[in-house]
Length: 169
Image 1: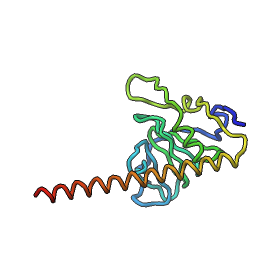
Image 2 (image 1 turned 90 degrees about the vertical axis):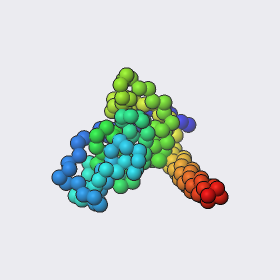
Image 3 (image 1 turned 45 degrees about the vertical axis):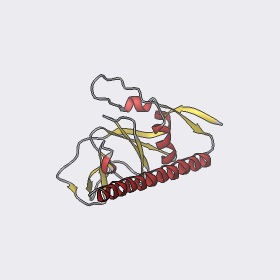
């Protein structure tokens, strides 16, 4: 049996990223600093001795391309408009559930997702925790397979371009 529940009732904590401490950032460190960006996995730097969120957790983009969730398996610090969800639920399951949730943008300017909006998401959870883990693992594996094939497709497209250029020189 599956049960629909509000994310706020299932989360230990939902928080918004704050400001980055530029004095403490390093190029390569122990704890990643994630921002709202989808490029470079959202990493904007590292801290050596500090993190704000204990892994596992899920980050959710809060501005621009809002509502994109990503499971995080290392301790980290969210900054700017990145939201973080700490929960006892399987992170990969939660990532998929949030990514499949329809985002309703209430602002007329730059799209934003706030902590109260994210907290009010209705998500269906299986009664069995083992089922949740299996579903999360399945979708995580499927996402990795899709990413792998997308990279392979890009390589083949570039090879095609190169071959066509050489044919007609």
